[in-house]
Length: 211
Image 1: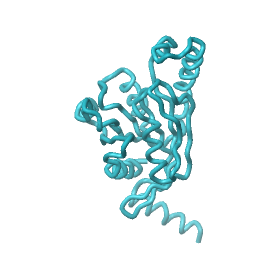
Image 2: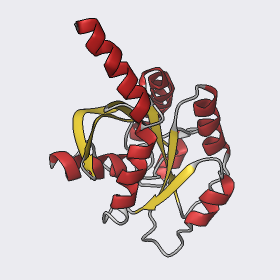
Image 3: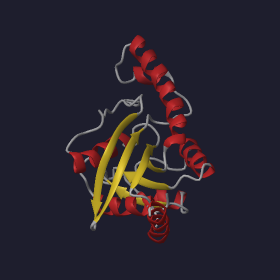
């Protein structure tokens, strides 16, 4: 009887596609708004934030987790394990942090932790089933970092949704991201004020179907 139920369960899973439980990685360059997106999702569905945000790059230097986040959309429920990762960068120089008024010792410590954070972010790709790549709509999307991130995800065949964050800013242009990466689904949001989150959640459920 158990085998029969298991058999039908696989059939229905194949018919309707996707999983109800997804390990979701949040990746992107520093200061794009990864933790802000993670916080927005967590606040919307658990009333708790996941991490701290800051205008100083690499505020998130360790992977942050939030499990059993149940997102609901149009009568469906998706349970997420959110994996908020440190920003990916090709170069991290402690002198960059001095510009924000940090002392040399603190800047050096932050740079070392940020470098380790990048390494950890890459390691966590082995544990994610789908990824949100967060990009800042005010920045040039066609950068070495963004291309490297998306290239790695494509090589691993991990489903991707690109989220263009900060659409509330005047310099924001989601069309540049869409033009740079036409092969991906792109949705624009403002994690800060919650703009367009309904479309984001709809896109998130579509992403889950690809896992």
